[in-house]
Image (cartoon, rainbow, N blue to C red; front, side, top):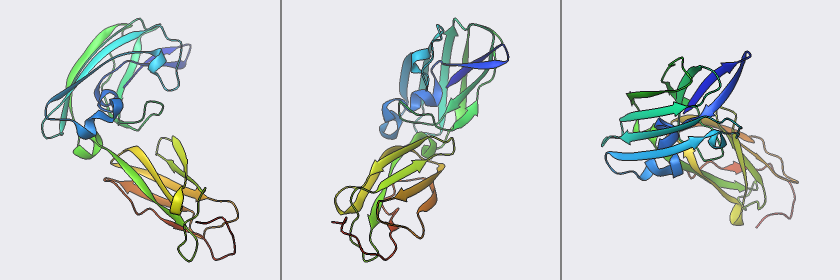
Length: 218
């Protein structure tokens, strides 16, 4: 979750804890038990990217049994100007931001608190994996190909294919649309890009290279 305060017509973002920012903490929700409570103490150093804000915050989130509702509580203080916006992001890795799930609103103060509930889906609360193979036209694995996954917010990650051309991304936020792209030395692809809306683990996001001669396969 982010709190925003407006200073000199520019936004200074301060990551202040709560809701799905906490839901995403250590990918915990994907294996959470019923009525599980998550807590965090955050600062500007927890922002992505980090900033030098001296503001501080503390938050907690309770995910209900059916994984359909979160109850959140947030306290913050030390903003350099009045807070103007607060919203909750979907789960993401520690060094990335996911898309916004819902808005909490504004207190218009430099310190304060928020409490409330919000609806979520089990898919939004989950994190999944995405993988597949990169192969030659005749099905042999291409080792060392670059596969990139990009979310709607522009954040991207890249991995290299391993033995048999296999690759895998973990801690992918479910319920969002992603662009998955491949590139490899000495290989071209008729369809190097796939767009997928991901709601569960995927193991079949495969790419096949065009017919050509090369020796960089397994």
